Amino acid sequence: MKPTIINWTATGANTAVVCSAATATQNVALLFANPVYVATATSIQPVVAYTMPPGIVRTLVVSAATGSVAGVSFSVVGLDQNGNSLVETLVGTTPGSRHFRTVLSITPTTAITATVNVGLGNAGSTLLTPMDVYNKNNNFTLAYNVQGTVSLAPFYTVNQVISFVETTQVVISTYTQNAALYYALPLANANFINSPPAVTTAPISTTSSFSFVGIPMTGLLTIVGASTTAPFTQTIIQQGAAY
Image 1 (cartoon, rainbow, N blue to C red):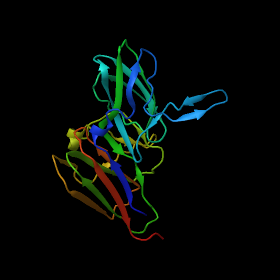
Image 2: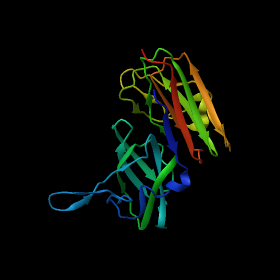
Image 3: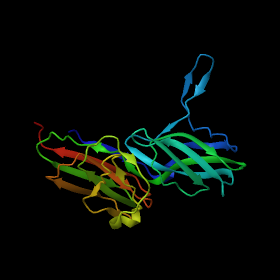
Image 4: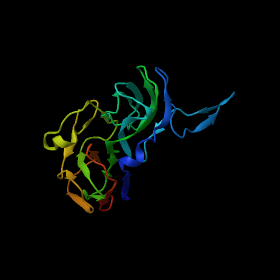
């Protein structure tokens, strides 16, 4: 298995990457920033969707470019990391809690006179990385190259890695500071397992690594807590030769 590398960007650079100074009108979807345009039979239309950077799902947060968004509700419709429907209501500047892979629409549902930015929140997760289950050596290394304040909790699963869906928010007892989401199989309802300790520190400028020795895991991901304000790089390496 080749190393899997995922980059997480700092929050400050993401305040308006989804929508930038978009005119907000009640019950009218916001225009996405930098839309991709496609030609139809009669016109050229923007593609109404925003996809997260490679390898991640992430929360959303609204802010006012001009005017105020205090008390305004925004209905967000999108998809999770497996293409399942995901809907959330954001109120004012309070960050969301759902982890979106694709955002299909963001619509103010209450009266508003403002221009609006929509960006990425601090929390989310890396995408589920499937492991080579035919590898005869179940040894894995997970490394984080961190450049500031982070809250990271690695999770692995030994269940079949197909069609994981995001469920309601729960607090994992050992990691209450993360308000971690868990992922479950629709039928088996199998939770991910916390293996190494969470990385929760402020700040650090170093690399933290964990080794999973002899664990026949089928998938690995990292839950990113809301107190994460710095960029980091996650690297996963699976050792050993396949059959």
